[in-house]
Image 1 (tube, rainbow, N blue to C red):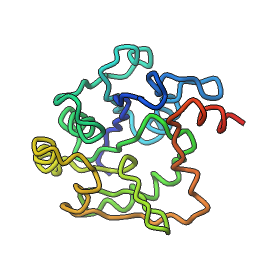
Image 2: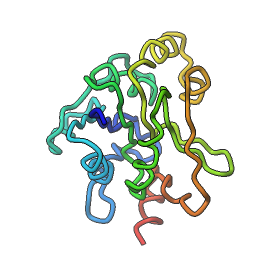
Image 3: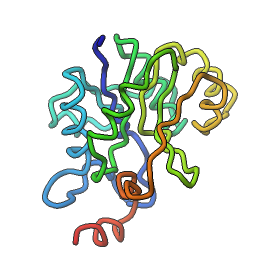
Image 4: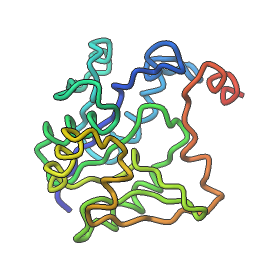
Length: 187
């Protein structure tokens, strides 16, 4: 299997958290640490997409936004553009319950697809957890310059494979967006 890069999206505005959520402590570790631990299980090439230099403390290259104020799609574009590998695992910085078993299940589904992402049995798609091929960069760019910023729109335009997850794995995708989430999930 060719090598892949892991790209952690940590550049959000964290408006609901009030401060950079990837750096918030959850169970005594920075929230982004959970995604970094998963990334290390999948690859030795890891990037963090962020404009915040405080992420240098984790020891991985930082990728700033190439096009500012474009949300997760802008981070995806910046990360894919900086990557040197054909396939890239995209992970958010705020999903501490995600497990490598799901990522490994997705990895074997790459084949001739361009994107592989999880989808729950009830139809909920998780576009910020997935494998993205470099071939989608021009389409991502076209979406950015026309302000079509929903990643779900991108998934409909390329060869996307959905790995169906049963409801028992629902908490894999729970993310932490607010101080209340931090407190509720802490226990």
